[in-house]
Length: 499
Image (cartoon, rainbow, N blue to C red; front, side):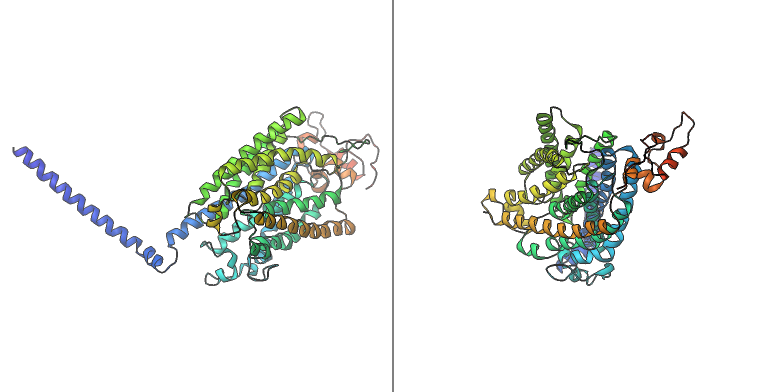
């Protein structure tokens, strides 16, 4: 009996101690949460909420930034080995130019307060926490610091610039990259960004482009189209009968690694465009993005298999890119079932358009015009078809899509946006590319192109062992001398014709 009495006393003491511990814990939680509760009562976000949102936006910015590695490996894989080092240089330099120019003027033009055409405030990111929401009113829906917003948006601008060069590989002078990068980052991209994301005239009409099928991808592809037309095709791309000849890239594994890196980066690209984490919608957007990409891969594979007789590796890889581009605009507005349709259509159409563009003598080494241009148009228009009412209400932009009974209004707005952006970028890019062509020339000489950009532009090779003999004891000096003398490294002493 004594034993049970002692046991009951100990049990009672434990219960009292547990109640006391619970009371102390509750009091501590109230004390710790008091600042947050006070802010919430005043209508502002808690510091904890701001911190969570900021961490998410920064993580998304890092993912989008890392997409540059994806563009690098994709382009290198689809190119010949003699241009690999030059492509790495191009990615690094253009990313750096974009960072500085977009910080100085681009971000202000894109998101600063101003007219319906362009922003005119916030130069050099010169704002304070007190006036940031008025200077960058179009981004005031997010509570993260303006520095986090800038870093995220810079990464987008750098991606759009990277798209331009994919179609211009293996024949472009490096000075052209530098000059165009400045104009693109300072004016072309920011103006379009302001129209749609910065409170400009297309935003006032309710255009839906959640993460940039038009702002980022169609814009970059349009500039790429102009540059490609100004340059002309690579040497040997078309035979005397006018038929296209394949110029295989030197590493499909590298190209597919690039696709996987880009796919990963898109989980920052689309979900990160929420610019907050607390409402948890970014998880839904990630699912939608993934479903579209998967559908694009399979649709491209089967379409290539049907049309070309084989499940082409490059086409299958580009199916993911095309689908990811297409789902970028609707990602915040559509449900997973619609994403599968959007991605599948993008993947199938991409294959057909790559073949068509090749036949009309537009030389696009990596399929950028189809993946980013055609798919960007399709994705932008698809928003006007599949935008779900509940998601439109959440974002408070535009109206539901045609297939939800929303009529043709939103589809018309989307089409207007596509036409306006295409025309604007076409004119601006044409002025730059054709102006440079007249003034300094934009294309490598035939001997430089045949030698490869690595040696002709940088005096070295990305893969030295491919070009400098090791087994025969040569060191590449003879080849260098021949190039300086205007000879082709592939010739037997005959000089190539001048450009």
